[in-house]
Image (cartoon, rainbow, N blue to C red; front, side, top):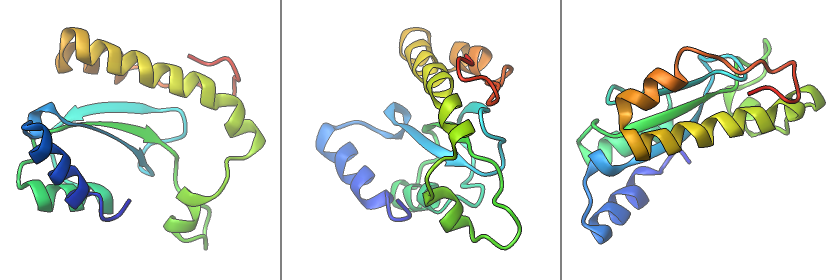
Length: 133
């Protein structure tokens, strides 16, 4: 994942698309579990995969759907945090989180980034509810 840029660049070249047609869905430790945030453009924010894509494309104008995973506990490396299995409570919230993500992508495709950001960004998913949406 940290070296996503080269394959993304190749796919865009193969399809004849540019960065504006790209949506990258990725984890974000700066957002709490259950929070989704859609944005277009910007920097890597410390995410190595996004940094790799930015480096390869040279164009920050792609959309990113960030899925909050929260910060690791003290002493646990970030890499271990994002690669470990979800706990029982977190697994219970995944259906609602993923449902909101799918809804956001559908709005993005149908009505564009501004409408999708307005729908997605204000409301977090409640990770304590298995049926959260």
